[in-house]
Length: 309
Image 1 (tube, rainbow, N blue to C red):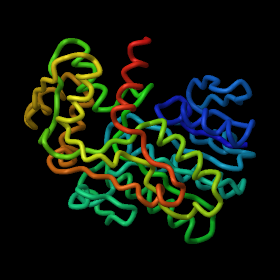
Image 2 (cartoon, helix red, strand yellow; image 1 turned 90 degrees about the vertical axis):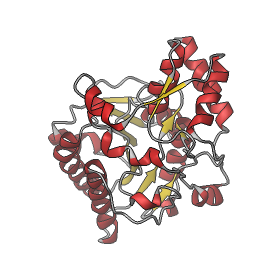
Image 3 (cartoon, rainbow, N blue to C red; image 1 turned 135 degrees about the vertical axis):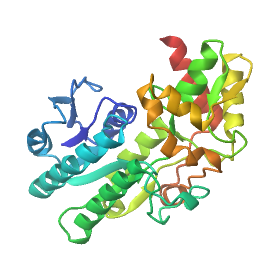
Image 4 (cartoon, rainbow, N blue to C red; image 1 turned 60 degrees about the vertical axis):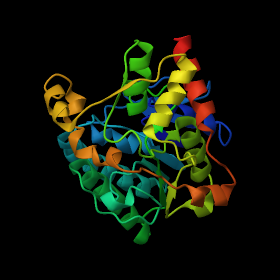
């Protein structure tokens, strides 16, 4: 049995598709799980009720955590540590291997210009401090031989069925409405992105590779040094729209936060858009011989999926 905690999201759904290559026994765990494969086992779970995590994990050979909590620092601080602790305890009890899908928030601000798995953990944000705590909890469990675990880390997302990425909300959605794209920071700085199907495929591979455990991996991410402006142009070309954009100043985020909750959470993360954001996945590529999808192809597939809806 391989189990996905957070099976309905941008990574959970394509991950379920990929896991079919390795097993016919897949358990999907979320508030309202829906089958991806015909043989999937569904396990409804309210993540606020951590007493059910033990049952959700029972009998699992591998457990994938791809869940995402409300994008709010206070929610993360309150919810993530006890949730992960329950997962670690259940994995230890059932001798399940853990694959934790993560982001880059825990890395030092000065490392964002070129991030490897060895980047210093020194988060500059509240949400980053939570992610650093989770990282340490997992690695401490592996160091004490309590469980086998790995962290599959990703850059910012884009891709099909990915409704909440900045690229989707601020660029694609606005251009589709005939508006200008909205951007943070410097549009002429490099910003690499992870294509969600690539991330899901890599996560499935890692979870089914024995010697991949007890370490951190960066999943395949664009090698092309595209700036935010380049990404806008790619999207605009695919949509046959003008590649216009509007830069949102930091002070406006605080104003917008009064009306749009998620905007209130963005100011502490703006540093990621003020300079180059380069996420290196050479370690995975060299080990498994798999590279990221070309940006032009990924954007085309994302737009085609949107047009079908």
